Figure 1 (cartoon, rainbow, N blue to C red):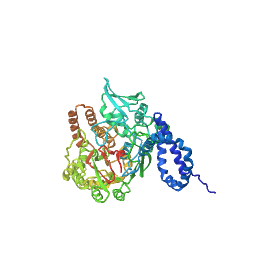
Figure 2: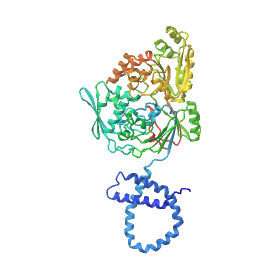
Figure 3: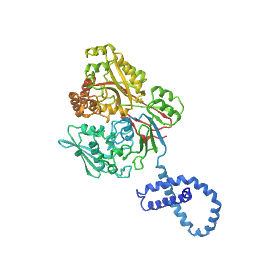
Figure 4: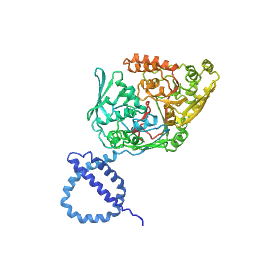
Length: 604
């Protein structure tokens, strides 16, 4: 026996939803529609729109019958006509307004964004520290403050509509007042307790980005308190920078999580991180529908967001190979391609319906050298590696000019950026350095490299092959080991790399966002991954971070970056320009130098 599903005539459905809308009118006449009823009204309006064509056809078919019935009933309602007319005249504009608002307020359409997203480890804002995770979470969570568009100079309100920094003698005191009406995607209101929970859980989890709170801002569990439901007070020691903390709050780590939702999914004291791996509980314009590793991330519009996105969905597709990105873009299967080479950009933009965009970047591409691996412990060997690399060949040939030769650890665009580039390829000088180090004949070493395409329009494999060829000219045999970026990062963080080709972008737009990780071994970031524990460099970096005079601070960074240039375990290669190809109907796309786009501003 087959199961038969009963169906409801669409005319009856429409009658029901019109009843809801008329009830809304009555509520509006009495002083407004309650917030908890608005979603029902919006759903009713959408249903009405969906069934309207069917109902119209049905009405056409039964029009004669209806007309006859109407003529019979006309005499009975003649008495009521003036009253009915008056009501209709009064409420018709309101009905139209409610229906229009409910329908018009709902975004539609999907942006399909092609990128290499195999670096995602987690989408929990307290854990996400990789580029693709940051791009995703930026559109899902809000912090207390934010930067808008590509402007990195002016902090704007986000969940906090005002804040104050007070010198409280032996400490700094920051007070944040939360904006009214903010809600999580769950519908729960944002309170000061959620802010306290979010900061405390990040400190307790102590994952990759936690050093920003613990080591840079020097926060503890006791540093943040809820003064009242709308007020958060954070205290910091005088040897930490309040301005740095404000900019840290603009990073993914600063995303505020719905404490009730996270606690509901907590297992074994994980603060809900197992669930937040591929779910979300934020206030941003989007919420996470799902993440399928090495396949896709799907974002859907958050109906409770204060700013509604222009598109209902963003599908971030894992397409690691730039050729495949180009093919799908040309066919119209994707709207934005992130990882095309300059040559591909030139080719694809000749096709109808395709254009391109450029974005500034604070990224640095570099080769890290693990100083526990001999002979990389020898400064002269590291200097030889820096000396033999053909930087001009990388920027001019591989990148076709879409990148700048940059050799110091603070990127161009931030205070303290040092443009000195003393290393040009000098094979004889590199050989002499290897001879002084006692490895004149060269040596064999592993070069770890990510798969797929890299920002700036070059395949990681091509960049690795270029550096491999350069090293070979002085007898250094670099065996390329290419793995997914997430796997490479896992090994790198565990100090298991030898030579590691990778990139870095600052977590907040301040020079200390690079200098701290690259100099402070205790921060367990870049210096730690390369086992470089230079106490003097770390001390210089901390002193420069706390300097309040901009000129003195810039001078301190000049001294320190010169020191790292020759003593550190890095060969910084270049700073890329970010290239994008997009369908020409995509509007409002703007890349932030911090490494993300505001998806909610995009339309098509």
